[in-house]
Image (cartoon, rainbow, N blue to C red):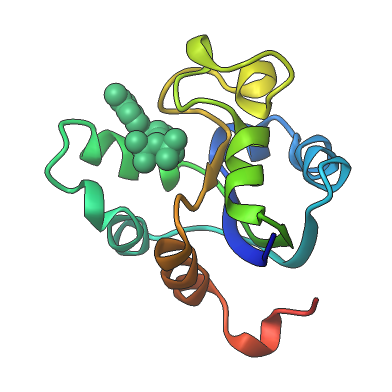
Length: 140
Ligand code: GDP
């Protein structure tokens, strides 16, 4: 298996409830290393740019409003098969459908305020990491 990097975001519903440490523990327990991390407040245009792929979806405006409603923690996770492994640790988009023991099952409030984002493929991971981090900020 290849060592990969993936972009993770701890979303505003989770930072508001002080869940950053508990969520990071899930990543580390799964063998993912946090090789970059920063807490930021997204502007509307930064949120819209990040989610541009969803701009035709009915929930786009709500999603961007939610993502700017408080601070987020953007981070890069590294490990074997990190993209798929992170998606597994996160659980399904809708917490009602997420498996037991996943972050979204345990912490998400609903399908929108679902606590975490994780890249879904190598190409998007590379783009999303570059959206928030320079190479100098990634320390493996
Ligand atoms: P993900 O890859 O599991 O995060 O899911 P998607 O890429 O499909 O959606 C991106 C994000 O949009 C999700 O994580 C949710 O925060 C939000 N989202 C997805 N589906 C819905 C929906 O039906 N309604 C609302 N309000 N938000 C949604």
